[in-house]
Image (cartoon, rainbow, N blue to C red; front, top):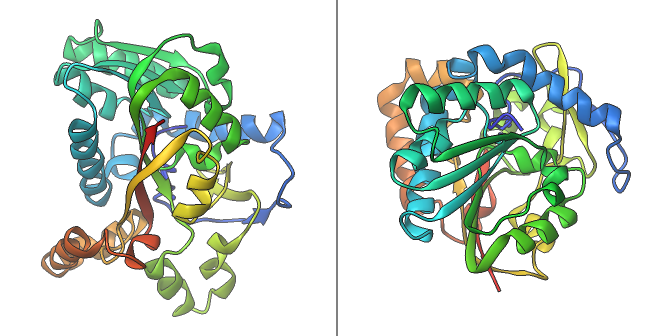
Length: 294
C-alpha cells in the first residue's frame, strides 16, 4: 500500500501523530482500510520525492533490488505487493522481468502506469488496483513475490496473505519482503531523549496502530521477524532475514543524515556488515525477510 509506509514502514518516513491502538485480534474493518487508502492517495503526487524516496529510503531500496535479483531467475514473473509509484516495478521491468504491480491506492496505481509508459516498459508492467487483502482476485503464477517498505504491515489478515502467496507462487519460488520492525533502537532513543516516551513505545503495540500521515490515518501492525514468519510457516520455509536501518537512522530522520552524512555512511557500512547477525537482525527500522515456497 503505497510502497513506503512503508514506517513502508513505504514505513511512514514522517513523524507519527495522533497514535491510537486497536485491540489485538480485532480485524480491520472496511472504514479503516479506506482510511489507509485515502492516506496514500493523498501523497501519491509527490511520493517520489523526500516523503517516499529520500536518500535513506533509496539505500534500503537497493538492498531489496539486489536480493530479488539474486533470488529470482532473470526474466521471471514478479508480483509487487504495494507498488507505490512503481519505482521498484520499473527497475525490475528494465532488467527484463515481467511485473504485476498492485496497490490499494488507485492514485499510486495511476502513477505506476504513467511511470511505466514514460519509460517504455508498459509491456512488462501490469499495474492493478488491488489491496493485499484482495489477492484472491489474481489468477496467475509467479516466480517471485516482493513487497517493499511495509505494505504488509497494513494487511488486515497476514495469514490470509500467506495462503494467497502460496497459491500464486510456483513451488520453490521466493518471497522477498521489507517489513516495518517492532524494535527500532534509533526511534526509541530519538523520542525518549525528547521526553516523548509514549511515542518511543509506539511499536510495542500488539494490535493495529493508527499512524498519521498528511492528515490521514494508516492502520499499521508492527512485527518481529519471527512473529511475521509465523503467519507464513505452513507454506514457506525461512531462508534468511536481516535488519535494515539498524545503525543507520530511519528515513524520517533524513535531515539528521544530511547534516552528518559522512558519519551516517559509516553507520551504514555497519548495517551492511552486521545487519544479518543473530540478535542484531531482529532490530532496525525495517527487516528484509526471504522465504521459499515449499
